[in-house]
Structures are given as C-alpha cells and as structure tokens.
Amino acid sequence: MNKTQLENLIERMNTPPEPEIRVSREMESWKAKREAEKLSDTALLPILEQIIDEHRGESDGEREVRRSARFIYAKILSNNFDEKGFLFLLNELFTETDYWTIGSILTSIWFLDIPQDTKLSPLLNFAETANRENLRMILNILIEYKKKGNKDAISAYPEIYKKVLNKSVPLKQAVIDILQNRGIKSKADLDKQTDEDGAALYEDLKAGVLEEYNITYKKLVSLLNKLVK
Image (cartoon, rainbow, N blue to C red; front, side, top):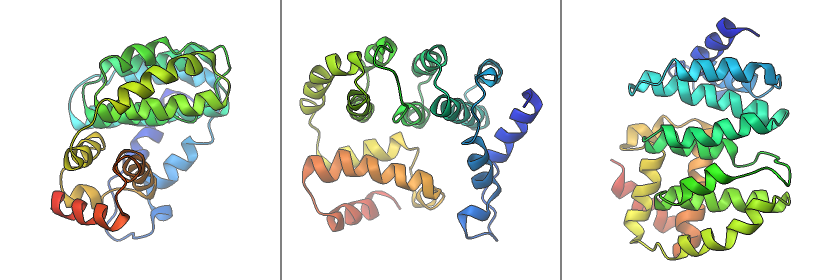
C-alpha cells in the first residue's frame, strides 16, 4: 500500500454517515475501519507519520485526518508491534490540545501488547499535567500494561492511582468531562456515534462514573438526558 492508497483509506474512514443506511456494517466508514484493522506492515508507519505532519491544522477536517491516520498507525502496532512507532504515538499526546483528539490517542494505545521493557516515559510525563478524564484513561492503560508485565507500568501505577483518587469532582462535572473528552456537546453528537465510539464512551462512563460514584445505570441515563439536549 502506498501513500495515495493510505490517503484514500483515510478519506473513506471519514465518509459522513449516509442517512439512508441504518446498519453500521453497511456504511463506507465502517468498512474502511475494518480494512484498516487488518494492516500490519510497519513500512507504512513512516508514510502515516508524513500524512499526520501534513495535516497539523486545527480545522475539523485536519483533525479527522490525523485521528484516522493514528487509528491505522495503532492497528499496525497492534498486529505487529514496533517500539519506535509506539514512542511516536505516545509523543503525539503533546502535539494536541483538543479533548477528543487526545482521548482518541489514549484509546488507540490502550490494549497494545507491549513488551516488558518498553519505556513509557512520554505517557508518564503527559500524566503529570493531564486532566481528570485523561488521567483515568492513563490509569486504565497502566492496568492493561501491568497485566503484560511491563516494568514501567508496574512501577508507575501506584502513584497514578493515588492521583486519580485525589481528584474528586462533582458527579455532574465528571459526566461533562467525559462527554467533552469524546467531543459530545449535543444529542446530535451523541446520535452520530458509531457502534465502536458508543462502546468506548460506555467504557469511559462505566469507569469514570458508574464505578467511581456508585450510581445506577438508570440514574446515569437520566443525567445524560439532562446534560445532552
């Protein structure tokens, strides 16, 4: 696959929802993402880095290209781990200011099968100034990496765990933070979520609200309905 083919794949991943299609698996964007998930050639990583660097603007379109390129990048790492590529993805956390974009980077590295000796320095440096929801995501990432025996994750987990516990905020604000992190400001934004995005949002709400505040699912839905109109 060359650069033109990668750019075409990214464009298809960002195809707007087709109103006449109601089943996710029939949407062009869904098909393109499934295609991206099968890639494993690490020779594509430098090309994706170039595409990301060529779309550093702050417009929604530029961000979408970066997010999709990083999605592909992470799937390649998932299928064929490359330590240099992993560090590139971690360092991307410092290039973004948008909540949703940062969240997508953290989500993309969450379940990577990393070796025991892989260094997590960029991720841990980012955690020092991360907001509450990103910090919780980092904690969940460390939990997964601990299971794989990663030494940095094992060492850093206790301190990050304490930071998360000490950052208590009101329930309503916790939900707002998660929604903002996912780029959701209205009911229309919520309705546009794909099955994959919806599942990721639920996991965020489950960890950051249902479990932490010990509320019922019914109460969470009621609160969401009040906040998202």
